[in-house]
Length: 104
Image (cartoon, rainbow, N blue to C red; front, side):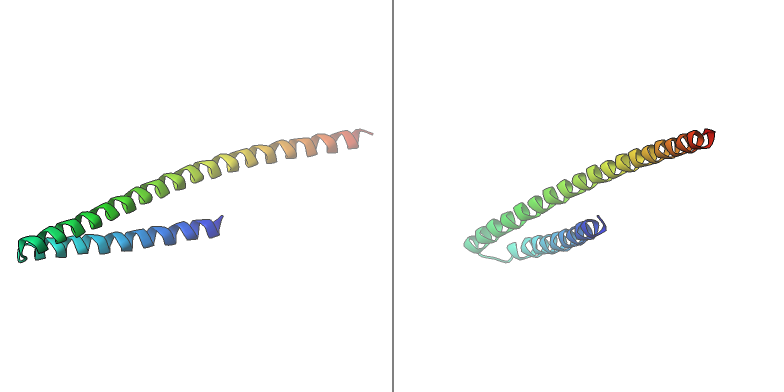
């Protein structure tokens, strides 16, 4: 489970780095556009749109990963609660068995 959590942390860090790179590209493209000829500006707008779409896909992946992580945490918490309940029940049974053994 820890390995999976580490992988998710690495994936989140990678998403963050990629997103920063895409945002930087968008900023640079916006600055260049004012200095370009119309055809070049159109090409840059298309590239900017592609970068924007990539950033949106990345953001969607990030949100999905965050939601998945929350679900996993909830499942882990539920399993831990169930485990504690089972351990208490097991201990009660041990005590009952011990009590019964002492009676004979």
